[in-house]
Image (cartoon, rainbow, N blue to C red):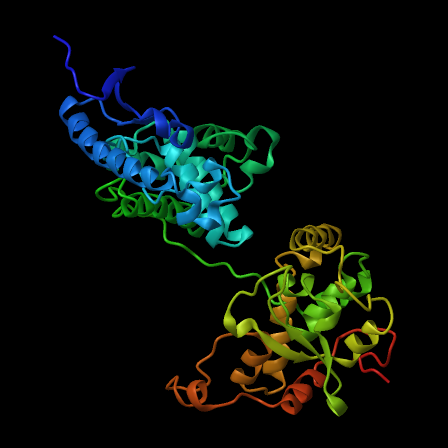
Length: 433
């Protein structure tokens, strides 16, 4: 025997509410109020029909007010409007959602939602790492329901991550390959190399963050992978500090892409992203102290931290550089991006094997090293390069009470930096005449 509910019919296994409006109100309201009840259960449908009946009654009462014979007299502001434009009923029909079982949605679907939310919060570089980890997870477990992912699936995923090689995605076959395919390709092209433990840990961290997000969104009751970790102990292999001989090699190469940027890195300690985002209006003049560069967030790039927002004096070599080839407005390096910096430095490393083990960031390390060797206090250097610093042993006095070093002190430090090669402006120490 079929179940009957007044004002509701079952279409495609879902109950649908439909109730016809009085004829005299149909020009204003349309023919009927129709809404899916989003349920297959008859008892739930009855309860929702009762709610919609109350809504229907409210709509009729509001419409009767607007449709009364003296509408123009009662509402003169509506006299020049059509009935459809005049009618704005303050009645909102209830909206119903289908029942969703906890953990019933697919990993691929949730991962897409997670990436959308993260893309609004993270910078492009950080979001790229999150996206890579999500792609690996989806390629392996995308079709699984998120509630079916147990610790065993986590162990299997960890095992596969630990077998990836560092450069496997650079091969044509690996650009669109999933996690399992990347492992097979790694054994073929780089059988003796695996990702560094800290890289494995970073990928795993992003996967755990996805599952934590699922818990926050009510898709999971708990993260079953939270106690699983990378077994290998992360080891840090920092890039080398440039020697004076390597600095001379870089500057004598006079690379078409990097030469000016290298000078900025060596003589200000700026990061590559900060250099790429420099604008001509970031150059400010401070009387007899010369020109400074104001490092601040702009439309091209954000800064690593609040401490990275700073003012750095320009070395005399940089001041002369500004007066010759660099633009006077807009971007100082209009064709330079961090990606291009990395690739250009890699090319130099290939041409000059003596640069092996260094990266563009090593210019920043060279600047800091010169500050240390000339006796500059550590917290002075930290101010110039945009590092957070305690500035005292108890992390209190300078950090809370000091206004920082003066512009004159900054100028003295920067002017003390000497390049180990003649730049054509002065003597062999890089002095400018």
